[in-house]
Amino acid sequence: MDNHRLKALHDAGQSIWLDFIDRTMLHNGDLERRLTDDVLTGMTSNPTIFQKALAEGTAYDEQLRAAPRSLDVKQLFELVETQDVRDACDIFADVYHSTKGKDGFVSIEVSADVADDLKATVEQAHRLWKTVNRPNLLVKVPGTEEGAHAVQQLITDGINVNITLLFAVKAHERVIDAYLDGLEARVAKGQPIDTIASVASFFVSRVDTEVDKRLEAIGGDARKLEGKAAVANAKMAYQLFLSKFSGRRWDALKAKGARVQRPLWASTSTKNAAYRDVLYVETLIGPDTVNTMPPQTIEDFRDHGVVARTVDADVDQARADLAAIEKAGVSIDDVTAKLLRDGIASFEKSFDTLSAGIKAKIAQLHPNGK
Image (cartoon, rainbow, N blue to C red; front, side):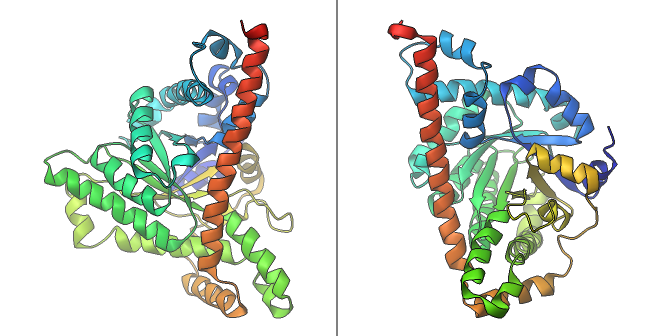
């Protein structure tokens, strides 16, 4: 299979991660094939993805049938997701070792209902980390204010973290600082930092969806700004990354083996059919970045993606676009705050749907309660 565009993307410094997981692909050789054919070096999961995987087919029936009847729905979900993620970590183990711990990660997410509960987030993250028990695991924590405090604590504790649902550059700055604070806390205690990994998942396409809706409502010349907010916002996040991971503070940590917290571009499938289907891949290519893509976006890029270093190109134009959007009457701060609330609510809804699906599956597997 022709993968020269995907290989070129990887060679440009961007890791390609698959935003999908199901048990079938973990056992039929499909994921191993994708490591070669798609140049995959990682994988992300979330309740929405698991909800779809559990709803289709019978891949999880045997484990659910054998599970202790005393387990509640949350415990059953954790049972199946930790097995899948552990198996995926094992498949990516060679990537992890060959890149000396830079890549080869698989993510698992804490429950959205603990997004604003520091203690519960940390406790759940520790439990997931211990249960999966793989060095190439990333525990996903929502990018709320409490989530940032959790990041600092988890990094201090030596747990790899993927901060998710980042929409605002200010929120991105908060979690970078939390990561650096955690590394410094470990150094102060004489603990190693050369195996600690973190990515900051900055969401892209949803920003255009919300901003475009508001620009359309304003009408007139404001509509000329549609499709410009998301990429510009992400480019500002990359500029922040470059600034934070340079200078005396970072150099001191780097000297002890610290790794940068890479920006991970999430929500990169195109939601607006009027836009190029690989828009949010082509426009954010550059060193030390990750793009987590659903299978179709990977296929689209394989077919017609164009590789060039773009993530730090036309930065002045990106600033101008954001300023023009603000002047037109759309507050980026208001948009990103809404998207964070909506993102947490969406994951909670996915878990509710997932819970209902597990209950229905258990009822099917144990008729008459037996």
